[in-house]
Image (cartoon, rainbow, N blue to C red; front, side):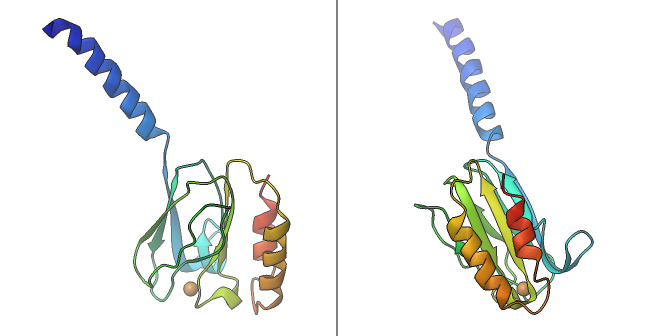
Amino acid sequence: MYRINIPIIAALSLFLCAASASAADIQIKVVNKSETEGLFAFEPTFVKADVNDTLVFVMVDPGHNTRSLLVPSGAASWRSPYDKEFRVKLDKEGVYLYACEAHKRMGMIGVVQVGNAGSLEEAKKIVADESASMAMNKDRFAKALDKVK
Ligand SMILES: [Cu+2]
């Protein structure tokens, strides 16, 4: 009796390890200046993720937050407090767009692709509208959306 349980427990714990390893935390640094992305940036600006991964916004510099501009159908929109680490579970496939509310006009935006992007029509419209009112980094949003494949 006792011996029979051991392989079952071993198999179960292997299964649980595999399941938890498949969902990743993806760190996004929120900074005034990024070596790779430029001024007022989410680093990296574009992320490709899998369903059930989690974005972790790390507020490296003060004065920023994150707010969704577009989420896939059925996904929850978000609005984070300023200056606090914030987590977003990516539980639906599609494209997510977000910005820092204080610096959206500075082009402080981000794009996330989760799994299959699906139609990009709505995302393209939002990117065009938002980019038109930006005072700097005007091409950042469109360039990030171009990375969605
Ligand atoms: Cu900001």
